[in-house]
Amino acid sequence: MKVFNTLSRQKEEFVPLQEGKVSMYVCGPTVYNLIHIGNARPMIVFDTARRYMEHKGYEVNYVSNFTDVDDKIIKKANEEGVEPSVISERYIEECRKDMKALNVKEATTHPKATEEIEGMIEMIQTLIDKGYAYAAQDGTVYYRTRSFKDYGKLSHKNLDDLRSGGRSLLVSGEDQKQDALDFVLWKPKKEGEPYWESPWCEGRPGWHIECSVMSRKYLGEEIDIHAGGEDLIFPHHENEIAQSEAANGKEFAKYWLHNGFLNIDNKKMSKSAGNFFTVRDISEKYDLQVLRFFMLSAHYRSPLNFSADLMEAAKNGLDRIVTSVANLNYLLDNASDNGMTEEEQKQYNEAKGFITKFDEAMDDDFNTADAVSAIFELVKFTNTKASESSSKAFVQALKDEIVTLSDICGLIVDKKEEILDTEIEALIQERQDARKSKNFARADEIRDMLAAQGIILEDTREGVKWKRA
Ligand code: AMP
Ligand code: ZN
Image (cartoon, rainbow, N blue to C red):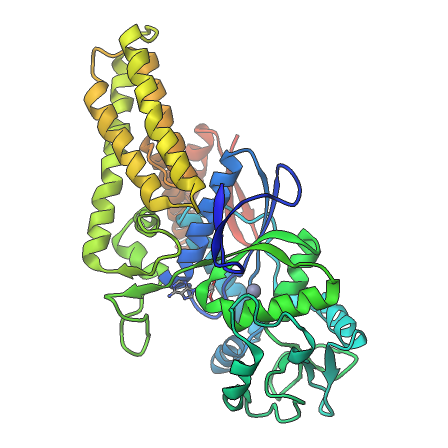
């Protein structure tokens, strides 16, 4: 398997640090609003990369953070007159709902910045002790960028270029920096902001330190893959490398993967210009599987343009796969219980060629665009070969292949099962509504109905959870 590494700007053979295991960190969203479709791109593409590696037999330890302390969160909290944690918890919850609807697997660990402050203070102290950081008089702690000799290795910038543009790097209130290139690790509290005690001042962390700390805590000092959108290459990931490698004395991440940007109608997404969609907006018009399919129709590193036409095309494309599987289900219900004929065995071997094609595409830096084409070819082949005279074994084998490849892409194409899940969710919602309007008879009726189908409901503080008995 080859992956494009931003560090070397080349495709490299993927060799994990530990055989059979992959440690992967993906920078997650800042939770001050519903996530937009641009935020959904890294979630979907790196979830697909994870699924593919798991399919290949790797055990993937996948960590993705929530940035829950940030200027934008504090601003929104002040506007609403609530604590910042009310805002961040609300949007973490909403983000999780969107991720579920996009069929993004739950991370192995989803750490939150505010729960990791102690580790951040410890790493900052190490950086000070090693001479890579200093506390200014007002208690701000800065990273001494020039002291890290490899600074710029990820973004391929050199320090002198940065210095010539250095003035613009000075942010107001940061006038105690020793050098314009230095960046903040810890900053003093301001009125109305959340803060923590530290050896330097009551304050809060700069943004970059959280990922260095969470990555080390949950994955170790050296990891295989660090990923995120390409806007994070500089300064965020460059600064993470400077922090982690200076503190740990080891290479931070072996492979750096970055997704290209999502634009709308060929323009940068912008709220003020009116071309901006949240994932929730899209869910009003489409099943979010369509959005996922749309994202996978391009290579993750390419820029991707979002438009109504392309979404319609994605919907039609996904429908083709779903319809083919529905036809196979119909055939399965009616097929005789025979084994594969010799001719069918031959055709099935031919079908496996499309699976090889799929694997080759995914092995080539997760080329989902070509992988999806391979699924289409398999579907087309299946539509012409499977018929009412086919054996059950043949139909089942073709269906299994389509479902397996789709599943690697996180696409649910066997509606037999999915309808059940959505029905359950709908009934749970109806039960909630019934309870709200004090129609307890209906609420109980729904619970009993679900119980009869082996669905167990559990009322928790975070809402209703369900599981199959
Ligand atoms: P943020 O909440 O801004 O830190 O972003 C969370 C993740 O979404 C990061 O990996 C960003 O790089 C990514 N991201 C933000 N906007 C876009 C976009 N328009 N296209 C692709 N990725 C994006
Ligand atoms: Zn990060």
